[in-house]
Length: 365
Image (cartoon, rainbow, N blue to C red):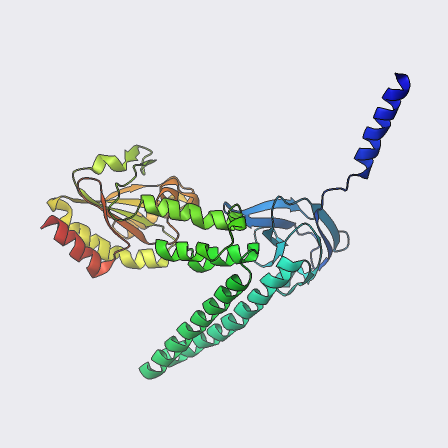
């Protein structure tokens, strides 16, 4: 019996010893001009940008490793900075060499996902450079009051963006099983109509259905379908300026505009005078507004309300883009408006100016 136990223990030991270690994502290299700086490595998934760890640099050199649960976009740069080196990471070895003040120019080597992402990223950079030149030329044409030149520049600018999208879609069609394709689809179709999002997902292989970027889009479709025109408006409760809870359902019986905005949003502030006029014209005819701010700074929020003379109801949880009502209504850009009838049904979305005024008048008259 003793010999049998010894043999069994030895067999277990040998089996364990022969198992290959799990593959890991490793990153090594050097980052110049990083003395005294905090350099972080982050990942971008459906919940946003999340810091994975802080890199420990010795005279600029570093070595880092981590087992990734899935292939994902990784960002490396100074904490709090948008100047980052971005690349697709998988559980293989990578190198990165850069200067901290020019992380976008980092020299990186890595796996197959990295190479595919880089090929698309390089084309995007080239088109962005052309568009930046066009923006400068448009400004010069505006100063010269050359409307013909302005139209020509706008056409060229739109053609460039269309070309980029076509290039990206071709990459997806050629690589339907790559997580990079799922990332491209989420970005190209993420702000389109529901049918366009579904069209994008249909180009991907079913094996990507658990990818964070596939889920990013499929979950957005699910949210958007719940807040589509014709659907009952989902209720939410949020504190007003004085800290008192206000529920959307408390406006039932009125035509109400839910106006997602923020003090720091230029287009929102430019639209506010039109909303003020709208409110003045219809507030005594069964119309009301619930402003939902995506601010984080309460003082800035309150000042904007006063400065723009926004005399209707306002709420915010001061969570910025994490605003719970904005998440519920799948808000991806502001200003974002949702018009709800007296029965609590969504009747229009993202109307502004004269179009919004006409719709409200149609409902109330």
